Amino acid sequence: MNTYVLMSDAKNFSNDQPINPYYNKESINCDVAIIEHLTLRGLLEQSGIDVISAPSPTGCQDGVYTANWALVRGDKAVLSSLPNARQSESAYAEKVLTHLGKEVIHVPDGLKFSGQGDALACGDYLFCGSGYRSDAAAQKFAAEALRYKLIQLQTVPQIDNNGKIIINSASGWPDSFFYDIDLALAIIKAPIDGQKGLIAYCPDAFTTASRELLESFDAVDKIIVSIDEAQKGFATNLISSGETVIMSAHAPELTNELRNHGLTVITPEIAELAKGGGYIRCMTLTLN
Image (cartoon, rainbow, N blue to C red; front, side, top):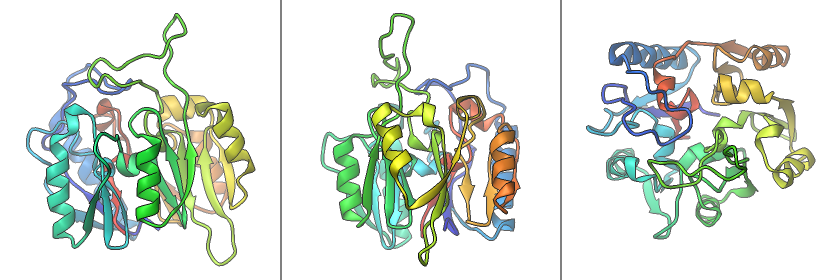
């Protein structure tokens, strides 16, 4: 699980267009961001995860977040369809994936799809979040193309003081602090050989219907994440090999829970890279 991933680099990273609620207006120290990214890559490799590297695309502020490039299973990759500020990444991502021997599949025209960011594989199951960066129809298409059993979910929107859903000024799309599902849910272990898998998720991040669906889903054990650690600490935006978890340094409760489950937990600091609204999971696209 997550033993073979694609990363780019932080050389073109910026936060010029605030396409999510986490965007930090402070200037980015690109030199520090590059060091953080290299440190993360080193930790992944030390944990037994093979990392394939591709240079980040020029002029793409979010090209460091490869998880949003596609959803991959076996020799197939369903390419994402991203916000305007990120659309220039798509052609580049297609070239990279084709070079890696993947058959690239496009979602139907007009559909939004945030790739792995909004579609987390757990064995044969696919936890998907729609409503902000992805359309449910696109996720159904991806699940069918890659032969996954779809679990369709939705997180709660960002609401203004008048109770109205906030529309992001840069993308023109509805916004959420959990705009991608990897900000609300994490796959820790996949079900295997009759044993349950393990996920971590924040119930308060999901709509009532989605929360009830997760509560009743019996193929995995569950660790509950607080809204504070999910929203302020990027707790679930992690990568797990099934034995080692690399995650936020700002989610001590989840860190302790994972260690109590016998997992090795590593918590690097990535303060500069977080200024773009992404974290550890966002920077790794699983290829296996």
